[in-house]
Amino acid sequence: MSDLFDRLSRLYEIGHAGEPPELWTDQRLDGMSEFRPAAVLAAFTDRGDDAGILLLHRPSNMRSHPGQIAFPGGSIDPGESAIEAARRETWEELGIRQDKVRVIGESDVYETHSGFAITPVLGVVPADVEIVPNPTEVAQWFEAPARFVLDPANHKQQWVEWEGSMRPYFEIDWQGHQIWGITAAILVNLSRRLRWHG
Image 1 (cartoon, rainbow, N blue to C red):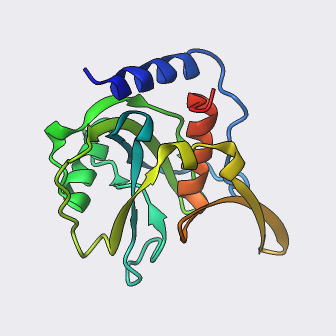
Image 2 (image 1 turned 30 degrees about the vertical axis):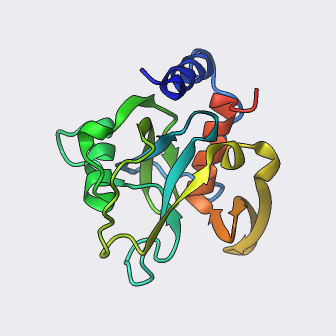
């Protein structure tokens, strides 16, 4: 067992034991009720207090969410659990072997205006894990410090006009990587569950 795995496991159990805190939701759902199940992996690198979270830039030519920053992940196949899907997608996108992901558990489902119900899966990977990105799905990958992206002080609420109304969203800017939309929303919710900063 690693110190990070133990710490994250404790924070996960405490944070998910009771009623959820005020979680952020997609402000554009407007009564949507049909969603396709998907899963992403919030992969923490095993660096103790300096743990990072692996994120990637989608290629600009992708049909879905081109150019955006995302967690590794995708649709859940029939008969597959969210954990299985998150591990599989991480293998397909970043080449991280499934046996290198130590899963802690699932967090709150995030429903999106694009029609997905996304289950974030928390896991720990070795600090020196081999990463071989799939160029058709990953333009670039990076590791952002967990202490930064899970710090509410770095969650900047922005506004955009959408279908005639101003809608809020979150943005997290780390060293020029602008994390926003779904990925930022999931990080905001994870920060509220885990209370990384106490």
